[in-house]
Image (cartoon, rainbow, N blue to C red; front, side, top):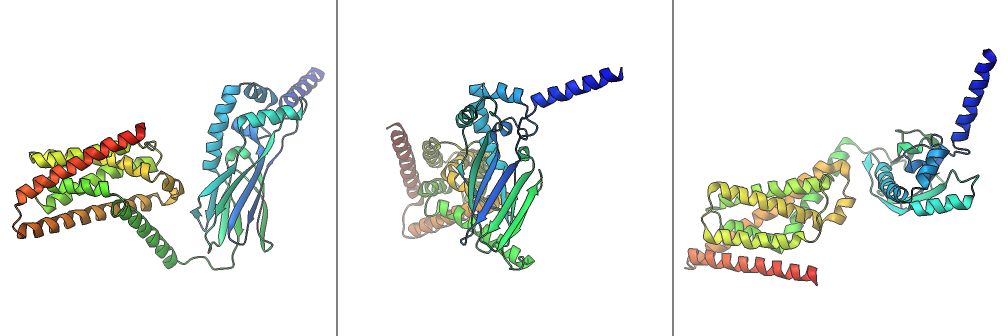
Length: 384
């Protein structure tokens, strides 16, 4: 009986060995920071195992074969895991997440071809080196790197020129830390100053998106002002409008809503024309005076997101509150500026004996004509 047990155990071990990776390899990373604080990360790992969501050691030959011979699944998974790798590879400088750029990443077809070139006996693992780069702040003191958990332990060598270096095995959920400067860490006041400056930069960007860049947005605010009974009511409508575009912009920034294509631009122009027509009629109820700006705000928020798609990639998701609050404060302050400027201009014209009612209707028709004309031109440009 004992002999049978040993034979069974030995058979089980041999069968497991036959299913396991014949020559699994640990992942490794070399990170080099040059004299301009430009970081280059070269990460070498077993790609097919990563496609399966497993470490090189845990991926079995049979399941790798099943996966690698399914071309459609291989291509699909390679694209998914590429995005996932980029998302889960984190680079921090003094605790702040740094935007990184993907330089190279193998496709599923490339991985399968290399596996074939390695021969039947040595088809796994398939090791590839992916490369990322990032520009660290000039005053950065400490750099932290964390890797996707599927890589397992990553043997990492981080160095800055010949002065600073760390060699470490980074376990899943841990980081590789390298102090690259002898400067003392930022004080509490420094952190407050940095946060304030960051918020002000987002406010500035939001303001510029309306004045001077968003002339069509200014026309829409003029239409909302002309349809309001007073400056106070116009400011309330502006706040409701801001609430609307804050919601859709936030959903895009948080990646809960996809960024909308350029087709949103003709729709925005259409809302300008409709807003001016409603102001010309001047028969909107109090409820309509609030619901219409809110609905139009949802649409314009998609336009904001589409216009700043490239910037959204660079915005630090760890400062998401500063991004949303700052950008929307900037937009709202610009909208208020348009309303006050419109009120002052119309007041001056009225004092010059211009009939206020006729002036208001003439401006409404002008804005409506501009809005619908821009809509037609934008549709034409998209179709041509």
